Length: 634
Image (cartoon, rainbow, N blue to C red; front, side, top):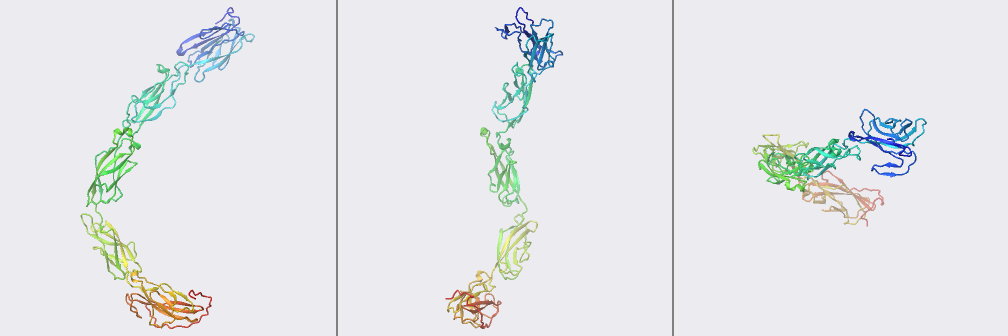
């Protein structure tokens, strides 16, 4: 509006602002400014002095999302210097000037040529100036003003994080918090209700509810049972304009799963079961399975099976398969159809992880009865002993009886049994067995000194079913007889001092025997009386000691023949002797006189050869006195 000169001393530029409010309601606002007054929103006036030719501005508004065919009117610039003759020219600069906002340089009217979006840019800063059209001289100083984009409700609430997946324990109390959802609205929260959001539930009642202000979802029923229903799809709506009619809305889906708790005890589908187990089942093998059902899942369904009583508690055992949650029945002892044909077991299945909040729903275990039927099978023969030990003397003639094994068909048919020796593990066959009686006999003459022990395997089979075999180990000990003469333990090299005293021991002779200790030691040692004896030495019996009888002379070689006989021999003969009367010419001892010492050496002869005469032979040796040490020298 124009302010006349009678009401103000200096010309003043007046801004007229046209604003269309929400939903198309429009009105004009004009502000009259005099020289000494400023108009306030409350209608109060304040008197003050102003510099000459000042601008006075109010904020301009432009409605966003304008879709009309004509440019949207924003407001009007006017200077009191403008007489209406077109001499005043209005100039607009700044953000969007000339592109978004245009001005009629004669009237000062401002229009918006484009549809604006407050969510992209909320305001524009521009500059206004009034100049003389003919001289281009400023009539008013340049001044800055703002055009604010007025919000409309053009954005619906959005859930940025949906859809949601969440769990809540079954059997939870009513009102248990499940999840809080949040929707955002891009509209101006400071203007109207465009960004004021209210939550509601579109799907999921009566199981769940939502707080309209906070968006917190809660359970709406007591004791929701997972086993009855596990999954729920809840749709939550967020609506702006405080939920009023005409407000925009957005929705999201919340997928809720009830997690399991141990609120269901295990149950056997049947109270009585029956199981067939053949008597040939191996000890330690699994013979059957049993399972109790539990409606819970995970650890809440874990259970342990036990045999609580029954006549088969010592014959069978049960374990738990953690993967399948089955009870595995195993055999602890052999079954025998002919002795016992059935067993009864009471089996319990109990949860291992209890939740005491639900103990009133228990007990969390169940019991069933299992009857086991033992099946009859054709079994192989059964030996009377798990193993046999027999003995036989060496040198016995072929066909000598060693012993007898016995096996019997354990079945009621009592079929005849046949025996044979498994020769697959031996090269020579030293024994035979009677196929009908099981009597074992020698097949060769045995020598204890060569093999003192034999291990053989006897196999028994049924005559009616030869494929059913049983095996038993038989150990045969070969007993000793006195069939070996004694022998010197080793070849002796004996050194004796020259001039040794009579009666001095110069060596001890020992002997061995291949026969067993009962037929071996103790031995008798003596010199052969049938030969010429050397007067310089003597032999003490049972100690095998050679004694000096006379002073030994140097540079002589002495020959000392002697016999060795077992203590049980009482007859000496120059011929071969019968068993238990064996005499052996062991050899001769050569005695070499040396400087300060004498060497005695024995030479073997063959078994059974008797030496009738061994004369003394005199020899000389160039031995040095330093070559030997005489331990008996005094």
